[in-house]
Length: 317
Image 1 (cartoon, rainbow, N blue to C red):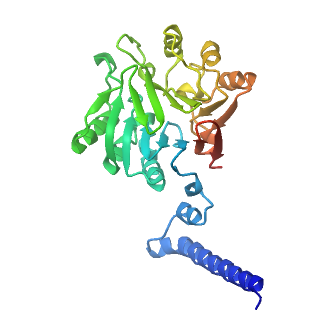
Image 2: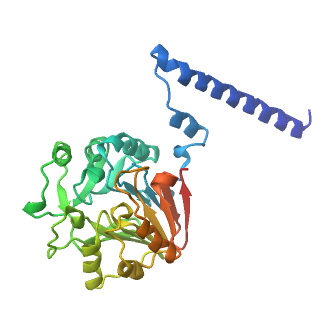
Image 3: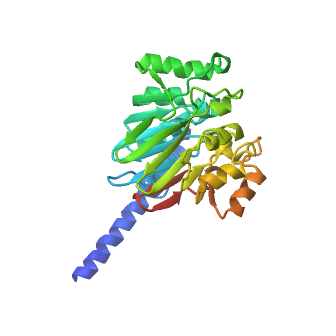
């Protein structure tokens, strides 16, 4: 048999083998559960064939990956660079398993940094599970005034998980800088002079620079925070903006967008959510500025890869 024909024959056998395996897996998933057998999930099957969420990019040396994880109505962002990992928020308690599974699928064993932007359930609901599942380096959260400290079970569970793991929470202070290899994240808000009366506005706001590419993470920060950042003269320019408060009309003022001047925006929100996120006015502002907007309710998990000079985007859906 000619070498080319042998290659075709071998390739044909591989296709038949792969097809047979897939058929067996389909039958196992379809009927195995009914028989009480332990079977893989559809995501695991499709991921094995490079067809599902597991085929999302994974980090390699010399590049930055920012994963805006689809956690429904909430926030969770994984940042990876030069072998270092940072998690910003962990979604709701219902999304905890998805966040843990996603991080593990990206090879995360240690989270060098974790940021709980503010203690609302859609941002820290899954945090206790994350703390239990991974080794934690530095855990950052805002230093809240007594009037803003919540008494929710979600918040208490996160604190209990930190105590059980022997991890001390570090106050996120304006000007604090944290390195993930060549990437540098700087805390912009809140600061010691902050006096907001809404817990959303105590969100940790942070800027990330990697080479000539830049990102801005805003938690649920609203107009009062944006105005304070503008007044303090921060360098807010960023290529990619994570819209504040899930694209709510209470965030993303014209003045703030003008200063940030983003090329792209990310909105993390749940499909058909009851809050009307993202608001039509926010989308209109983005469209008027010629911004490309990605939404987790429409595109699923969004991953941005940067080599320090340019970036590319891959979506789950």
